[in-house]
Image 1: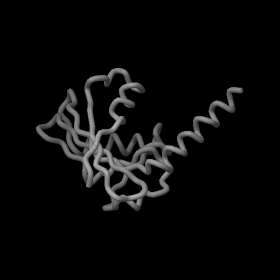
Image 2 (image 1 turned 120 degrees about the vertical axis):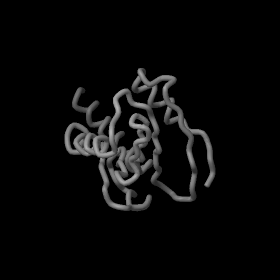
Image 3 (image 1 turned 30 degrees about the horizontal axis):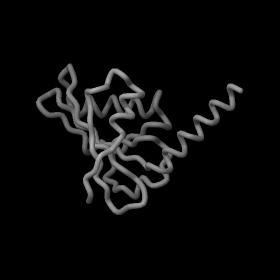
Image 4 (image 1 turned 90 degrees about the vertical axis):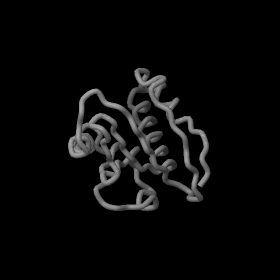
Length: 130
């Protein structure tokens, strides 16, 4: 396992400017050809529970974010997500809340397949506007 930098936090701030300077990250490289994991920890304004966080994420994965966000309640490993078209799949078993307002969400993604799928979506959207 090789700890290294990642541009993901900076990229998120470009897409969601309100988050600029409020998040950072690093990457742990392992010898697998594809599939990565995000371990996000952040402070929220209102106290919450693991159940509330997971319920909100599950609802989003079944609603407006369907096809982009997944929600997994099974104990899976990285290769189980290989070829998954969704941009991020929340690992519900790893959600944690500390002191009521410190939330941890862990999410898997196929960094090759998911990215290629989003590029295809983008190209289709551009084609429709021509």
